[in-house]
Image (tube, rainbow, N blue to C red):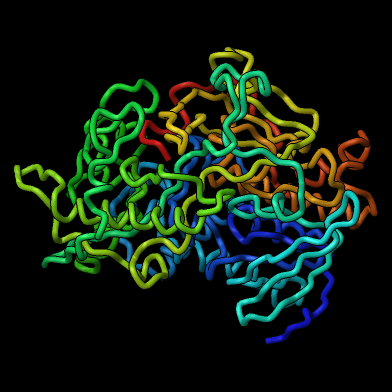
Length: 544
């Protein structure tokens, strides 16, 4: 192990190889930049892969509200299944949904997402323009005034590397660069006095964050596959959450929109299933909610069981934040323990339709998650540190209740689009669900730019939102759009020898950059017929 770090310099350094980070790397490479990506887990792809979260998408994702490269990713996923998997001929003209999960029109295995993302970045790696370090940890950020000049990174082999860069993109899952580099940021809930948001509390609470979740992959087969009883099972099986009709470990949970109790169904390997969000919400079937492999979609007899991803209301972790506290590592471990306890409850105590209890045939699928135990490599962290940005979209900028028929606020510096209901889970500070109907929105360039630091661009969940608007900016297609805009901006700045803030400040440069995004296939604005649509569409009555 080297004791003195090696020295390297690149054009663009991306902290985090998740959805936003990979979209940023692709865009920066395509713009002519040399790029290095630092990713702490073994798989690139974040939500799509290491966190095992099937895409949460809006109703128009097939045609609008994303980017050409995101649509290409989705098409490549479908092509992967058509090319390598023997599909059943169902006579349907619907776009292929391998899992037929009703959370999204494209529910698929994490490994397929990984294969597609690896293929998309392969040409740039072969050309020597892109280096991706997985299982690498940022140890220290080096600054000079209002710039981040370099990062010290511990690589997978234990060696230290001192990486300098002209521009640094923050695409980590927790906004770790903001903390390491002392870049102004917020966590938890802001007060109404700070943001003016109708749903904000009276007082700020920096450690009051949305629940994180450790997802896991399940199948249902013959035999008894019950895991060992967790040592602290009695703690987990009786825990509750604000607004819940009883313990979290139950088929009963509150509708996030109304607070009224809902009773979900659980039927492993059902013969007929919902194929859309609208059908799924009539009587929520948890098995098919985030199912990523529907055995009926493939050649008869190929698969003995479906595969579903468990990211449900019941396995949210509420006991504390996973960062910015002294015992963060303990909370990360306990989030995993909470999901393991929920699995044990499913196998032993969950009420069955026949009046019995427990589903011992439920079996973890480690091959699906790329882990030894079948739980995701990384926790799904819904809420990162949030940049104190030049522009901060707030609830009143996109809420249907506030904006009415006017639709969301239009931004002159738009660099992308997104849509989802404002979907906030119960929090570590004791808040219940917050679910607010939201209009399709534009992503302002100012939300990617720090107020002070001049060479850092937000490229993922650390984008400048509030605690509340994070609820609709954090989903897969919005994160991809943010990352792609950040990577394209970095390449544009290097090519024009200007700064990110300089692009936004110059009407001429901004117009030229937006034209470049449009040429890339980035949707900068919503069609007029969609821009003022909100309310019942987008998001789902099961929280994501």
